[in-house]
Image (tube, rainbow over all chains, first blue to last red; front, top):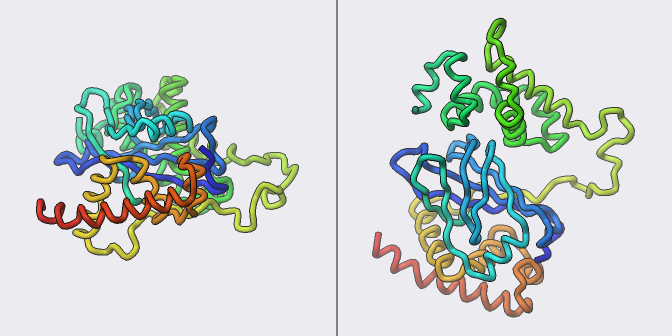
Length: 106
Length: 202
């Protein structure tokens, strides 16, 4: 994996839930020139943009802890998920049922 | 406990919930501490200058208050909890200055390009103004993802971030630009094919 010389961010979003407190959004940032050795920051919030303080984001075949809204995965983990065609995208909050989601256009 | 219930709590009642990392309690901190500080014109200017986001401030506050146990230092014998935390947040912004002693200016560093801006991230679907079209697009995109996440990423990188085929190939380890173009064209075809089916399903 060799990313272009410009930072960009993709977004994952939960399905709509009856209880808005269960909804989530996760941004995955690719720093400029990111490679498999790079750290890719994650930022998790509800649909109002308020950070989720504790949870875990499951994506690309891994589960990434979220603390104070922040988490991270490596470029290597991202590419493994691409190669293995890992499709599951979930967010887990303590004491709650996992909520599924997907990659979005923005 | 809901956010509405948390809003009624006193600061002393709120502290234990913050220590436990209860979401609605920290949501209150977001609106009472982070939002007001980031809106102050001086802070907003410094945050823009030093590339500090509101998420960064929140993360630092959470780490210090919970991770480092500083919540235990609040005595509640003078001011409000929010006021006490706002002082911390102001400190984070001030200490974000990469040149506190003025050795050099950000504008003079070779690493910055002409604009000094990161690539703008699209936050809304310009042109996709109809909610139904937006919804349908995401339903079809979900089907594409379920078929092959790489296909979905190729479509996303080409159409939302305007990556060249070469950039896509290098990022996603696709053997050639021609192969990227083929995957992209197939992805578009699959999205179009899915549309009437998804529309019919409702």
